[in-house]
Amino acid sequence: MIKKVAILGSTGSIGQQTLEVIDLFSEKFQVLALAGGRNIELLEEQTRKYRPGIVAVMDPERARELRLRLGDLPVKVLEGLEGLCEIARLSQVEIVVMAVSGVVGLLPTLEAVNAGKTVALANKETLVAGGSLVMRAAREKGAIILPVDSEHSAIFQCLLRDREGISSLLLTASGGPFRGYTKEQLRRVTPREALRHPNWEMGRKITIDSATLMNKGLEVIEARWLFDVDYDKIQVVVHPQSIIHSMVSYIDGSVIAYMSVPDMRIPIQYALSWPERWNNNWPKLDFFALREITFEEPNVKNFPCLDLAYQAGRIGGTMPAVLNAANEVAVKLFLQNKIGFLEIPRLIEETMGHHQVISNPDLGDILESDQEARQRVKALAK
Image (cartoon, rainbow, N blue to C red; front, side, top):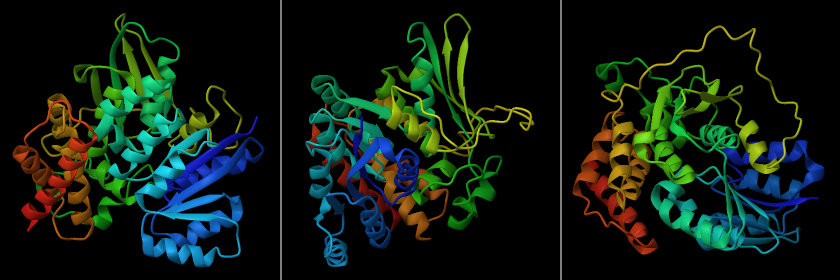
């Protein structure tokens, strides 16, 4: 049976690796729609290769350029957020791979969920900002949300064996490129240094999030919604080798861990093949080449973003959306060399401190809080 797929964020790191998986199992998939960001050259190349009926580009000007480039093909080119939403609710699509970066993924994810689709979710900001809305809609519409992040895929697979008697979820973190740095060293790091992740090849925003430990903080909030556990039962463990991707601890003292080489194609493939497992030619774990597996506590004094995420999650309501929006803007400013590395958590904390929380927000409240937080960060940065 051929699975019909739409990929939102096809030109990004996760999107490109998703297409690598589809290439390996080309007889099992049909790509019906693609959506990309600014790289329309790559999106054109993907469109010519996979021949989807619909493609979308966020920027209207780039969408117009893509229409000209694809004028010889029978393909519909959409634009803006509405274009992403239209793809997400396409009746023929069975699996929507949500691989866009940032809170822009929230509305298309809700559209896919409300249409009863299976969503392979690689966009953690969606559940951070609107976890209660998305999970409620998934329950009501019978939609399936499959995690693509390696940590959440690991927990999902561990819980397939036993969902009873959970003591805690253990999310592993590499520690990023600055593990062990002092505050003084962190004050001087550059965007170029922060983009050199020791284990993973990822997009720019998520790589900076990994360096600040905000990525792990966002994953904590995401895990709370995906697996319906309290924050007190979610623990972060620094594991520099990135071989154990996460663990589940049980009340009898047992711990089930998921291990693999650090290769995002493995969890992407499982999200696409679920509930089956398929043979592939990706690198496999070699235990005899493995020299050591180590663990340590995260240094929240030097990397306070992790604590800020826990705070936002426990406060709830619109605060996680504010945390996420403030982080997105602060990371962008850092990448533009407009603020220093340590300014990222400072700006997030100050923005959270100014926010008046709405405890049971609707979609409008979340989006309004998101925009207010973005404006607040920009004002504070000036």
